[in-house]
Image 1 (cartoon, helix red, strand yellow):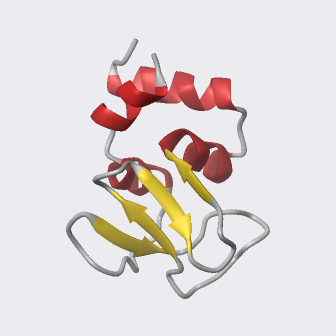
Image 2 (tube, rainbow, N blue to C red):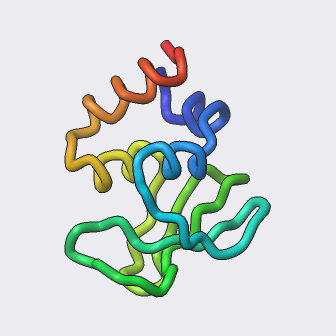
Length: 94
């Protein structure tokens, strides 16, 4: 399973919704603003943009950028291997 395959087949917003309980999403369509999910950047002003076209996130305040694997690592506090395994198990990607 490579990162391009993940990016092409896994919707970053869907994963975000599966892993969080946040209901205060801003926007709709291909770019949605959410609260930053990094533990050292707790905010409540929807500063993190999930770009569904590109399969990436970027925080307008703390400047972190990444893909769905990075997001899973931050939300769940796991290493890359565990995040990849979660994707594989939940999205039937090999």
